[in-house]
Image (tube, rainbow over all chains, first blue to last red; front, side):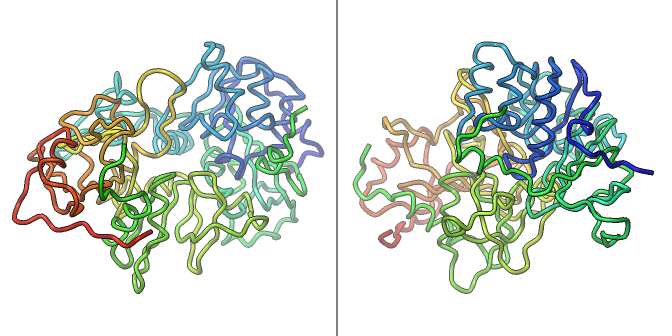
Length: 235
Length: 227
């Protein structure tokens, strides 16, 4: 078994027009910037992207949007310090938005990975984000039915990875990454350190390798926040 | 709009901090509510939760010492206290929706006397963004709001029915404003006045409030330090 790929370009190969792509991270924390940039180089169009946010500045997801690759975004908070890339296209009607409460977004992804097609949550009941969805009462309280979310590909960022795809995460960069790893047909992880089998304590594994299809080592990964401070653009 | 004796944001945050118990698990909304953390009472140790997967974070790091993998829900750099924990987003919202979080403190555009909250968008213009607010108001054991008593142009923010899009129904139980501390009797759809700043009369306070203020027993003076 070898899930390792030599380059980010090789790791993102095969993501074609119209695909649904989950991208891990919360803002810049845990965002797989190098995988996203490799996907921009590959240039598929008409993608549906699932992310908590809608990009910041002119790198990462914001750059994907600027390059016209994203037809639809499923997210909870499409605002940031510099949300211009998304905002302009949204207000012009060039990009579709499905706004989802953050906890519902997380649970829909979790459900997608766990084979649970729908679930009920109190979140959004009685609000415009709960409209037109089935509701039901349980023990006297009203709940909204939400559906699972799955993807063709997930691009995620991890700290340690071994050849089997076992992963750990760094600090709060965990966020959506372990959930998305479970919910995609093909999960692609960039890892900051690729270690040998046995190099991760089995008790410390957060994402077991069964959820990970491709791995690429990206040492010293770039941080969106630092790139934005330098007013970077990609490409 | 300037009203005699009204509290500033720091003072509203200070007042809210007085009600946070030792050992409480607390989520503070982005912006104004974050100020509550600065007024933790000596001898009490609340544990702060942030949606993106941290329990037990502390103050912001010194400038230049930020680690951008370590941020809060507002995307600001944070530091950890001893005993902190990381977890994924599904676990984070299990803490919220599962009723494990003791207190959520949020900002508001409007709060209604039946406990409805509007705090995520003004109308149908612009880009909507909700984040974790709708989960927090439906999950935390206690949902409190910090707000100026009126809008910048003097309109009541405490109302009989919210006109802005709702964040949640019947969810807010206490409101800390620049003029008063008010409980929300959700079942009775009533605001119950607990404290008011000493400089304002009952009549003036009522005129700045969009729904009737009920009084049960006495109304205490809302007094806070200079901040």
